[in-house]
Image 1 (cartoon, chains in turn yellow, purple):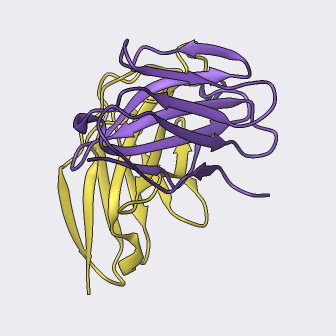
Image 2 (cartoon, rainbow over the protein chains, first blue to last red):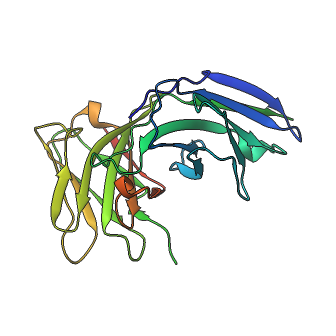
Length: 112
Length: 116
């Protein structure tokens, strides 16, 4: 699976959009971009994933650049409950090596 | 549809005792993954099981640790002769077909193991 690079931490004011970047310059054509988050002391939670088109669900939007070398997770109206570590993961949908490897992620602080 | 259930939520053991951590996957899920998270560190993959089979145990220590997922009942992560370094949060996740099929993982709330 391709390697990802994320900033270690970010701050965002409550009510604003939180934009979390992820670089994955070695991504290959069949690899998806996944986002999970882990709120303190809880198990990780799936947020969204995409291949090349932008995706949106009730939690967030995922914007993938045209060359697919980077992406941005957008939380449109951040709340205090969005304070968490956000993990960007790139992996093949057809990978026989089934485990998901979590990196260090981005620690997002939502400020009141 | 209940989520992934882990118990106990907190487990305290003395050095040398055994720890058994249980994980009931979501209904209809036959793939289970165990992860360990040491204090202030990231999630580390330990083992991936599919009903009655260990598929990948590359992240599990060779000694004292074992995992099973029987045909009936929950998945069990067993740690024998625990040491203080085993103190961590242990998370279980499940998926219906395995993440190699582009499936997402559903995580439980974890078991916090404390070794005295």
